[in-house]
Image (cartoon, rainbow, N blue to C red; front, side):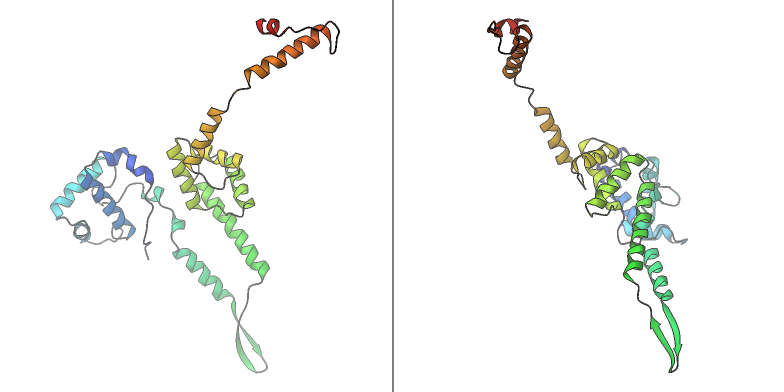
Length: 260
């Protein structure tokens, strides 16, 4: 069964390919993405183009023109209507089909038949807390590896540091959390790597562009050392070097020190 949703990134509003299209063709592209997610485009159906045309509310001739325009900017394949780079933007882990299937198979393995003096009895084995904890840990490790594979732009050290931070805060790292941070980093005009480094430095389990901008403004407004206090300290140092502390020959050389 297909997912009822798919990933649409906030950067689409600035995507050069989409901005080359008229407004109605941008919607046509979104509608084709919906057809792809519904597995309509994956069926070897001779009526495929008719069904897509019906979904988009177009006749076949107009659909062909839409396909031509979308393929010209590199968004879909003109012949198959398949969106390009679909697999790069969507993740297999988004689907619960395989996860549910693994769970059901695991449950079946725990159903064993035992025989006793009264006949055959079917017993359902209960998982111990230790087994459950071990499974959870294995699941989290596997999940973090999957997330790592999709972050080639982030160094291993930064990813490990952020993973440990989330673990210490009892906030397991998820793909959705990373995508939210990526989106906010884009708003702040910085890379995902920089955003994660900032999170580690400040103890943030998440990232918001407004947080980052606020810290930048605060750093820019940090006042330099008070000039009068600085001059006063320099005068005291000069006096100590010339006369020694508490010398009878000590005199006020504030103006001379400032002149130096």
